[in-house]
Image (tube, rainbow, N blue to C red; front, side, top):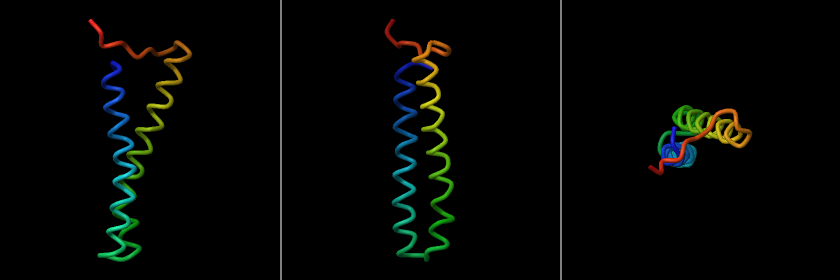
Length: 73
């Protein structure tokens, strides 16, 4: 993975977490509390897992175990 891919994946992960808040809020207005939580959960879990993966990957890059390549050629 290069740095531009890392940044794109970070934007996707954070975007999914933010989207989950919007889905829950509008879902509560339209469908009720319980249904809104069920609709929100997949977005929140996937976004959170992406962010955790990127944190671990960045930590391993800082330590020098698994490097993230520069995309400069």
